[in-house]
Image (cartoon, rainbow, N blue to C red; front, side):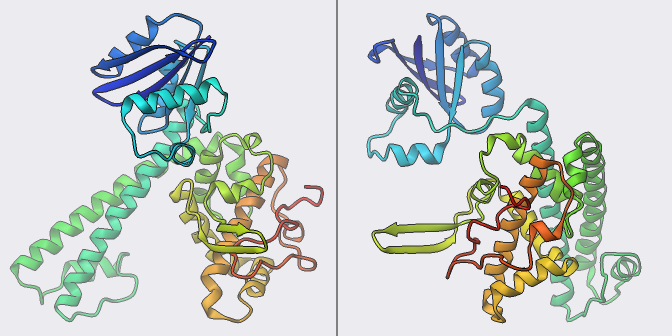
Length: 363
């Protein structure tokens, strides 16, 4: 077996090949796009195993390399940084380190979903970008109103509110033109978002887990589909409590000897799902008495702990959603958020203790 460490870029790539004895067999610098690098790999002796670092387009590259090698490992960039903190960093050195990790079978790998799941995730992220643009347009319209001391009515973006906005006479020529162009852009963005959501609804219809997760109070189709798309295969998590770590909803920890300090949440993983889970948590405490009671126990009547509590609820919901995907059971408040015996969170920690992390008693 030949072990290939690959440091890949759009215009050049570095390769280091190790033999069965772990010693360097060959070093190569390939100038040109990915096609040139792939042709060079194809000319290498077989059988071969390849390791490269996850970056933009890592899924497509994984599909291409899988046809040329017996094994393809995609390394987690942040965990590689923890392993190799070196002041001497270049493409050749990085390729050598990847080859050594591959030879030692110590690559911190990332999950590479299939093409249809990658496309699903890309569509979810595209919708988020459209929402961000729409919010920016609305903020600019509100800024025009504030600049002229005009108070906006409620429901400004629907029916009578939009009609009122289109017919404001107090604006000068330039601001009237700016308002009209922003309203045109707002209408275009609304149409684009509806088109994307229509396609997302078609994809979600083929995933029963999306419908299952929507039985949770406060969880709509957008949150459910994003969770299912990014979890992909629930069996890749040995415990459902790992979902809180995956989505970055657990606190940073610095433990040494008898001291154990917790800080802000790690914010690892997909930020889109983390944001949606927090939004769903706010809705859940309004629609579920059990979740509201659990939220109140964490806040303890202190409004300064509301943000800590909502993150704890979001983390809890992620764990429950994972357990529901694993078991196929619908939402049950008595299991997911038990009223008695639920462990309270550690002091200063946004994550509850193990013991109430799953909607099933035997998990």
